[in-house]
Image (tube, rainbow, N blue to C red; front, side, top):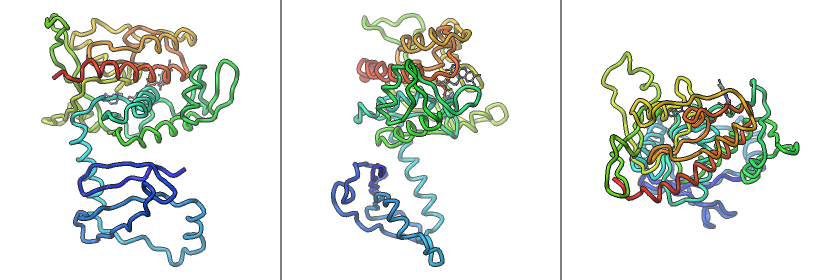
Length: 349
Ligand SMILES: Cc1cc2nc3c(=O)[nH]c(=O)nc-3n(C[C@H](O)[C@H](O)[C@H](O)COP(=O)(O)OP(=O)(O)OC[C@H]3O[C@@H](n4cnc5c(N)ncnc54)[C@H](O)[C@@H]3O)c2cc1C
């Protein structure tokens, strides 16, 4: 299947439309302008649909002696990347929803939100260079991924094949699930993934209750403080490396269980005095753990929804081992919860 065609105007805003047989929106694709002096394009540049496998064979197989790429100047490559990235930083500085962590839970939440609400701007912040968190393999580095029903509903929606074993299903390789989910999330025009970017703090406001009163030092989360992950890792040996920020009425935190980067937001809630202490992830109990994580996915403090394995650190829930249905279920519930919180808080400062 062809990916969505994307049209790039001189203004750096990307607009996407579904591909049709005849090209973008049924019109013949305009010719692409070649610029080799390095100046930004002054006319519309169009990324056309990928050609079919047959067309690739016809145009390339057996023709390698004449093979040459279209000409390019290095600055064109630089500008093609930086223009888009800085436009995205500008555009997403005010987001509707920020998702922290692009593991199985965060990506599931992003998929549900992107699909249901194309009108919302959703930023996904991932500390690692490679998104996907711990969902590239099953338990003990085995390939297969197990999900208990009813998580198969989500696989059906995604179009990921599996073997049905009765109460659970098995995807032949965890990477098939994660790569499919990731590619769908990245295809949504209203979702931007900022990877290699760490959330290093939360933006807070005093929490004003419905009565107009503020309670003690209670806060509402109103966005995230970010930095390049490599910069975040060097605050101890380099000085004056101030961060960047993204404002949003709701943040969904899915940073996984405790570790060098994990459980980030909930650990920060403790250090800010918003949560007394963490329960800590308990021993393994597959049957109980999965239900508990999904059912407890919620707004832990105003403006902050916590989901996935990060939640086990707050509640002291059991770990579940290599069964991933709970990450999907928690991501779906986090999306529902995020939309509720968004409606409640979107007008707030
Ligand atoms: C020691 C260990 C034990 C495990 N135990 C279990 C278990 O009991 N049960 C289970 O289901 N799975 C377990 N797993 C497997 C796996 O981690 C989880 O199942 C699953 O990947 C959790 O999904 P998640 O989306 O909640 O978090 P993860 O897959 O861990 O994804 C979290 C993502 O958030 C990113 N991130 C973290 N902090 C930040 C930050 N500050 N800013 C931006 N991004 C950030 C991380 O880079 C990561 O990509 C375990 C893995 C390990 C290594």
